[in-house]
Image 1: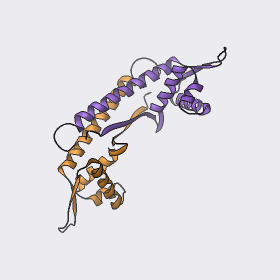
Image 2: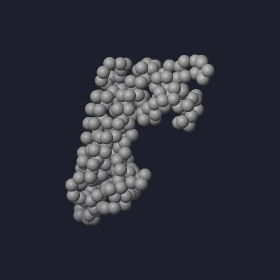
Image 3: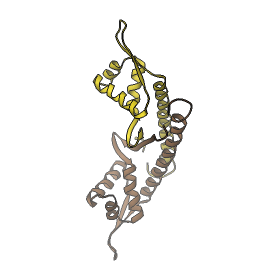
Image 4: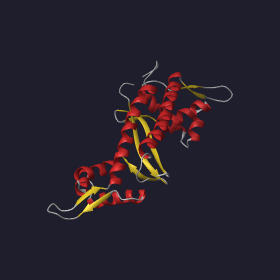
Amino acid sequence: MTDLAPRQKLWVERDGRVVMSDYRLRLLELVRETGSLAQAAATMKLSYRRAWGKVKEIEENLGYALVESAVGGAGGGKTELTPAGCELVEAYRRFKERMDEALERVYTEEMLRGPGPR
Amino acid sequence: MTDLAPRQKLWVERDGRVVMSDYRLRLLELVRETGSLAQAAATMKLSYRRAWGKVKEIEENLGYALVESAVGGAGGGKTELTPAGCELVEAYRRFKERMDEALERVYTEEMLRGPGPR
């Protein structure tokens, strides 16, 4: 089984609706890195409208603000994560990384050990 | 976030093709429990043909036999897991159960701890 590889998809639900996911993490991390929802959207090949809608959807599901926008200056508007938004991104990032580690470790321990066909 | 819940989907791939998954585990476990591919298929609301095809597909991807059929007797044919099939089912079951435990534990530790909005 040497070229077999374990995979996982993670998300967080409320009442059957996806609240947070790897995809949403990426969008929020790009906002944090670039300070711009437009740039984050472009990197993910989303329209600005769609990216904005996605952020608003997550905020609605969670019940608190994730981004704040500052208009103006020479460079135009800027979008930043709120402290709660930063905290969510960091917590979900740790959650995801620890689960990725667990996936490799548990797969190796349970599926690749002992005798038998590989 | 008390009514938020973490979710995961697990599978094993080879060259981008799904080799093993929760769905395939269920099919093989039902064969083991009932001794009958027809019954396993019925429980999963699959046609016999489709269930058979799925088992053959997993065998082809793994390169070894998972089931063996015995014809005859008063009750008709019987399908059983091979020793390697049993081993695969048991290993994947443990893999899945440990990952389910990890999901709850890591989610609680990373997403539900500390101050901040819940």
